[in-house]
Image (cartoon, rainbow, N blue to C red; front, side, top):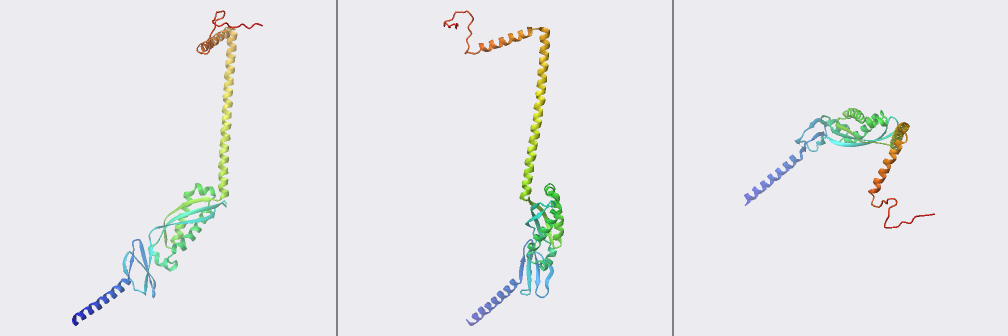
Length: 277
């Protein structure tokens, strides 16, 4: 029994030792996930210039500390209120897709810290947007939006490169002007529509005038022809037109059920009184 007790005691000591060793080893391990990079801060040597890639790695507890950065592309919207070349207020929002340059992470941690995007992006985006928008007036900002976006992309990419940031895409998602300018544009559009309407009315009146002149010319020509015919044929043409008109009236009356034709001097079932004065 004594030997068995000693065996269990040794096994317990061995297990405790293994647990202690396992805890120490586990505390000296850290993981770098996919799309991330790590920078090591050493209490004695400072920030090491080596960037640690993905996987599980060792470090010295208490002496060293890993700082893990997300190097995947992320979006950020930056709203800016600025002025155009013609002193119009412009509300513009820029959407950028950014990521840190992996090789520049030690310098980023040394100079900017872990919240580098909050320190850098708003300030340099405001600076670049105000500088670019001031080159164009309000009309050019609307008609040359692609050119404005290209200029912003070039200038902002160059500024971000100084801080170790990479911009994968830059786009202007929102662009509006002040209330006064918007009202002026609306009034201008209304005035243009009214001008187009007035132009249409003038053209319509001109066309109606031309039509009236053409009709008058036609009637005058017809009158001349009739006068010429009367001069050549006398009253025969008038008598012919009178007979044709009488025939047409008689035909129409004969088709009407509410009209009865009574021949002159004929006897009828109903004596009609003669009005005598």
